[in-house]
Structures are given as structure tokens and as C-alpha cells.
Image 1: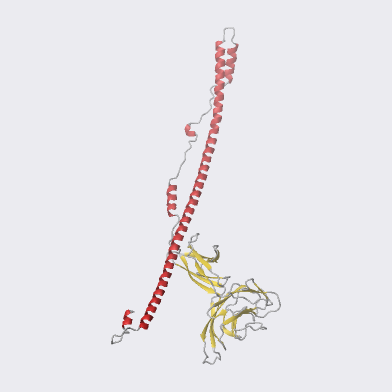
Image 2: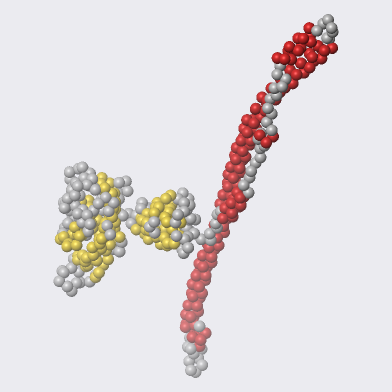
Length: 451
């Protein structure tokens, strides 16, 4: 600034231009303020980064401690149960083995008592025997002859009876130790992150990507919730890396997070960092109160009912804009009629039975494509249950046309269905900022979701 100020000095050594210096000072002050704001913004970013690290570290500690405490409790319970089982097995073997010994002991004790009694009787008989009185001795001799004094019960040897012991496989500790040391991992960041949130009418397109090159994903799991709620709910599980979340209220913040399951694994990875998104675009809705069609509570699903009046069911308002993707998903199908149509138009025309008319482009249920009422040579596959028909448009030229097509506004239209697409230019006689969408079915059973 000083150099620029000196440049304003005159050759004769006049004073510098005060206004120039003031202006340069103001510019320097404004530049300093802008620089300060940028630095403060970066300080805020650093604070958020530090906060995320500390909060995630604290949460990870809590998760680890809780998990290992639960694991220790479970292992202790399993070990106690196993110990009780083994002790019961010892008790059963002991009881079964002691029972025959008790019976043998009882038999031997009975023999000992019999022998003691016989000895006493014999001794009494001998001491009382005389030449004239030998009756007791004779009686004892007869009794002794009836007792089998040479019959002894068999007592099992020590090798024939159980000798209990416990065998513990020391390899279990090695295996458990090895598994425990491998159990659990700490990741500095999740293997997948949300890459992009794009607002759609009444919906948000969520895209995510893998950030860990060594991670091989098999499935992804997307959850969302309103920002003022902590209750996340699943909205998608599958192998795709993008998904349109429907039923999003306009101008309301939503949180999104994603995780993945590795190839051949059962457990899910840690969640990605939550991202906040919102849509400012009002949802596409069918116009209510039209005979022949029943609408869902959110008015994004139309069902052709059994009522006789038909015609074209239009959108409630012209909510489709160039640059957006408009999708019709066929939920259920009914009988086909060549006048059936799904598409967009410049204006509503009551009384028409189809969008196969001027100022409209549409697809019939048999796959025929109509532009301003004229059928194109190129066709799409016939519409079936689950089919998604998408319309993409972009302006080609906005000024007066120099060709012979007679229009001054041209839209490049791409209609896709079942991995096929048709691309053409739609010439209109005037510029239109937004378009209506509509559908017509001659027979009941058709159900269409628009988003």
C-alpha cells in the first residue's frame, strides 16, 4: 500500500493524494476483516474436528469397556455352567461306583456277624461240654455244618474300581488367548463415507463411497432421521452406492449415515460421519379430487380405480423443472390400452383422455414414445410392475430459431426405462420454466409413484 501511495506523489514533491491513501487503507482494513473471518471459520472447523475426535474416542472407550465387561460376564457364566456340569458328572460316577461297594460291604458285615455269633456259640459249647452232657456241642456242630464258612464274597481290586481324575486341555487357553488378542479392532475412520447429498422434490439423493482401499464391501446400510431426533431408521440395505430417500419434508434438516458389511462377514462396519441435508423443493403431488384415481396420503401415489370416468390425472402444480430427474415407478399394472400415457406437458388440458397430444411428451404402457402427439420410431420396453420411467430435460436454445422447425424454445429430452433410453429434441413455441406431469390409464389396477 505504501508503494502504491508513493506512486501518487508528483514530480515536484507534492503531498500524496489523501483520498487514494484513505481508499487503500479502507481496502486493507476490509481485506484484513475478510482474512480474519476466514481464519475464524477455519478455527471453527478445527474445533469441530477436535470435538469429533474427542467425542468419538470417548464413545469408543465406552463401547469397548461395555463389550468386554459383557464378554467377561458371559465367559464367567459359561465357565461356571461348565464347572457345575463337570461336578455333577463326578457326583454321578461316584454314586454309581460306591453303590456296589456298599452292597458288598453289607454282605461282608453280615458274614462277620454270623461268624462272631458262631464263634461265641462254639466257645460256649466247648466250655460246657462234659462226658454226660454233649447236647450243646452236638447242636453247634450241626449248625456249623449248615453255614458255608468257606464262601467268601469277591472284593474288587483297586484297578477294577474307578479312580476319578480331571483332564484339562491346556490348548484351550492358547486358543482362547489367541482369539482374545484378535478380538475387536479400533478404526481411526469408517470404511465408507457419505459423498454427496442432492436435493430432489420431496426427497434427497444420497451418494456414498468407499474410502478404505483394503475394504471389500458386500452390502451397504443407509439410515436417516430428522436432526432434532436421535432415532435413526433403516431406509436402504443393498449393494448400490446411491439411494433416493423419499418422504422428505421441505426445509427440514435430516441426518444421514451409512455403514458397510465386508465380503463374507456378518457384522456391520462402524457408521460414517453423519451428514446433514435438506431439500427446499416441494414434493411432486398428484392433483386430488379427480374421478377415476385414488391417491395416497402424501399424494405421490396414484391408483386407477374402478370408476368409469378416466382422462388425464395431472400434477397439483407445475413442479418439474429442467435439470431435474422426474421418475415414475410402476407399483402395480392393469390391462393395457394404446392410449395409456405417462409423461409431462406444458399445460393442463381438461377433457383429453391421454397425454398423446400437442405440448406434451409421454410414454405409453407398451413402450411407444409420443412427442406433441406424434409417435416416434424409437421405442422403449413395455412397462411392467416395478419399472421406473425417468424424464431428464435441459434447454438447448433460448432465442429465436433459425431453422424450419417453427419453434423458439427447444428442450433436449431423455426418457429411460429398463436400461434403454430415447433422446430427442422437443420444440415448443414459447419458453416454459416449469412443467406439469401426468398419467392416463383406461383400465383399473395401475398404480404409479412419482418422485
